[in-house]
Length: 197
Image (cartoon, rainbow, N blue to C red; front, top):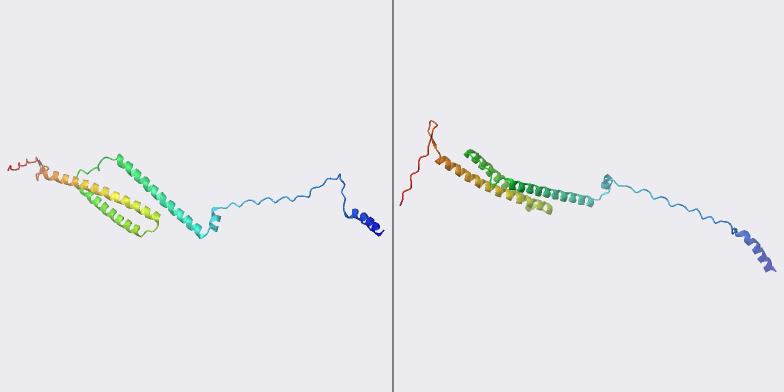
C-alpha cells in the first residue's frame, strides 16, 4: 500500500506544481521587444574626407588633377589652332606688304628677331623634353615644339616675301624718277639698247 499512498500523494501534489490554464483562456503572446531603429547614416563632407585620406589617396588625386590640367591645356591649344586656321582661311592670300622701303626694312628686322626668339624657345623646349620623364608633360612639350616649328616656318616664308618686296622697292628707287636739287623731278631717261653681236 505504500505504493498507492505514494502515488496518491504524487497525484495530489502534481497539479499544484504545474500551473493549469483553462482551455478558454487566450494565450498572450510574449511581449516582443522592438528592434531599435537604425541610427541615421552619417553624411561625410569634403572636409571630413580629406581628414581620413591616406597618402596614396592624395597622390592619386594630385595625379588626376595634373592629368586634367594637361588635358585642358591640350584642348585649349587645339582650340587656338583651330581658330588660327579659321582666321588663316578668312585672311587674304598673302601678307599685306608695306608700300615704303622703311616700313619693309622695319618689318624685316622685326620678323628676323621674332624668328630668332622662337628658335631659342624651340631649343629650350627640346632641352626640357630630353630631361622630362612624365609622359603627359612630354606630350605637352611635343605639342609646343610642333607649334613653334610651324611658327618659324611661317615666319621664314613671311621674311622671304618681305625681302622680295624690299628688292622690288629698291629696284624702283634706282630706276625711278630722279630729283633735281631744287626738288623738281626729271622724267626717267631711256636706257640705251644693248649692242647686237
